[in-house]
Length: 159
Length: 255
Image (cartoon, helix red, strand yellow):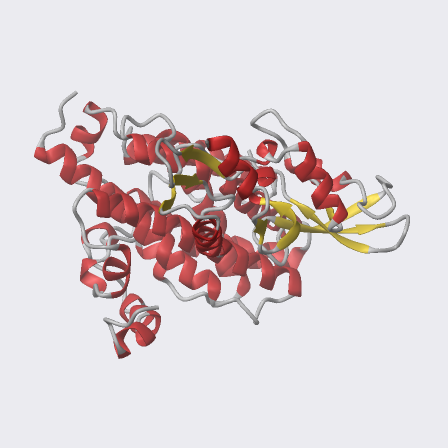
């Protein structure tokens, strides 16, 4: 039963990145469905201060009600702490499709130098410069591609 | 180990001071929105403000689970004497050099605090500390880059140096011990303010020296204590009045 819920949640998109589902983003950390109509969902924030989280809770709730679930609970928990390695391969491709450089994989701790040669999502050049690690949302950094001369945003690696 | 009332009181005191620090510095950081010296700094301080306020919410939630009022009530209905933030975070944003130096001192302390709490026996606190650790890395990196760069020109270096001297007693005030230090250490909740202060000095002193600054001797400076016990500068209450202005119009409103 949880597999069916997971496939439904794959159609719930990040409100700020419409090509990326919340499942591929890696923020769905628990699905409980033991009886007919039950869907208890646990989400974890990408950043503690992410304002999209409440919106995503509501989107998940409404979607499951729309799909006929009657006992729907959605709550946020830090018991699994999100990190950027939790974005699926499909999710990384979806980020790139949206024009956002995907975060590099890391092993827990990483130096932020990794941001300085972020590949350009438009032309794949590594000849890029990070302008600032703080972008229009908490999860994005801002970069410039010296090759195709475009400014672009990256999805930040988080350990 | 079974927690006694004193352990729980100590834990709540710890959570309140951490959460209040974050809420108040978050508010101060947000005052740079629209005013940053360059656009990138405007965005940086605004982003950090958002992180800080988000982190304070997570800590107020833990307090709520421990029986305290809900986060909105706690954040918006207390007056200055009920706040446990350090005086460092409540000081006005001043010139950019003041905000930068404060940010440098505060974020290195918080980064180490979260690192220490990543192994606390208090599970919900351990979880958020692990989460915050990844987020704050961007804050310390930001502070380090600017402190380093501004040390490379004479005028900027002089301004930053003067500000370091001015802010240092307030920075040391962050480590004001509580009356529960022994209980917190004994129960494995937190290794205490003294241990934190030592780790912090070992981090910020060599770093500042490598950027070419001189750091006052922590042993001969009298720290600006009081904040943890509700004794604040005249700057906190006006901040709270502004922060709660909308809430106060209709405290029971559904948002």
